[in-house]
Length: 230
Image (cartoon, rainbow, N blue to C red):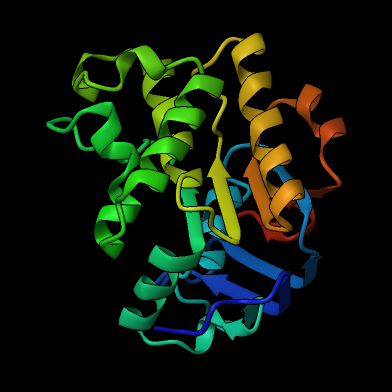
């Protein structure tokens, strides 16, 4: 497994195009820097490449060219298995579709990162309980996630991303299924967590009202080109 990273995310000349799509979607990020303890928002219209960039920064998609440094590790230079190990150890992810296991309870879903690492002990369970309290879902700990609403499921996904105290957190529209008050609870928790621990947060959002809470905002129109109409 790659060594534990130092703080900071740094991207240099990152390029991506879907294979076989001549004249189609292109993404080029000349430079992107985020220091530890900071939060960055990815904003822009649908189809601008926000989710694609998150998948690149987490190693779920390999870039066509360029470098992605997460702390001391160069993610684009790792093998598929090394990237997977790195994610399990150092990255917290909130997927747009939540990626929860419906047959498990809320508590079991949240503790999955610890189960994979074999350290789901008392400390992990206490942190899970604390997170669910902050997110107002602690009453559902023993319920299967299949019984929850979309908004409740979304908050379970946020708790799972934070429970193992990762150095890098990537959240793709983590407030999309929430009303404004609960959405603000989620954003406050994410930002507070990275600032306290010196971690990095990259969050995709369509909500312009949330942008002032972030240290940096990247507008994807500056990086992505639409498909050619010629």
